[in-house]
Image 1 (spheres, helix red, strand yellow):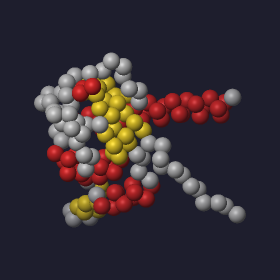
Image 2: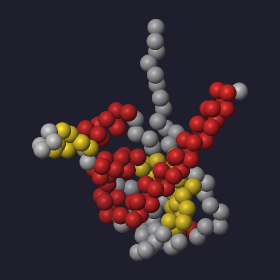
Image 3: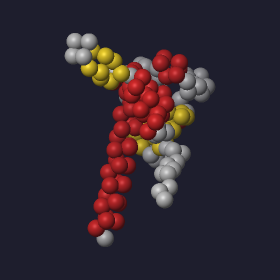
Length: 148
């Protein structure tokens, strides 16, 4: 008899983002994103974000809620900006982002909505680059195990 597949979603991914100045400063540039905490980084230039990978059901619910209907083409498509917004807010589970006075900013949908678009873009770019690097290393390890 087949047993149901049980997959844990607790692994997640922590990414450290290093900026050239405080991340909320106008014109702040991301210098790097990494799974490792950079040594000797200026503390108010460095933040971490803990990410969780949405489960399949959550991804399907997000997709359903982002559908838009085009009456001319008579078809549905996915609103990519709405999808990214939902994915971002469901995937970020913790961060160390502080305001200029040094107080932790609560991770909430409302606070995410108020962040500069460039900072959100940096979060996504950093996540994608680190997770793609991780996917490549997992693929290499898998290929080595299969060919050994």
